[in-house]
Length: 123
Image 1 (spheres, rainbow, N blue to C red):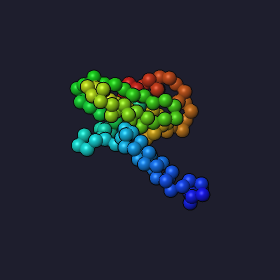
Image 2: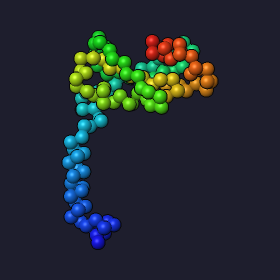
Image 3: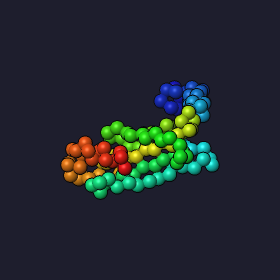
């Protein structure tokens, strides 16, 4: 029996080698050097809720707006911002009210009206 709960040294080294190869082949989540990060922005909805977002790409290019689901944040769209097939677009993402870095209003009324959610997207 090896020192790692029944795994001998050879098996451990093979496992570590395979993990290293898999990690090297996986897409990186970090931005390539020299490309710069997303441009951060803030917007206020009509009820005063502060919305936080960021954008990548030429400001004159057609935009794609990425909207996350409930209990998520704009960070859910990290891979899409780095996708080379979307290079000709300005990619915009933001945190919905009550999510991520955006304000989290206490009143349930702040979440009940669909027009408020629509206003957030319009901003």
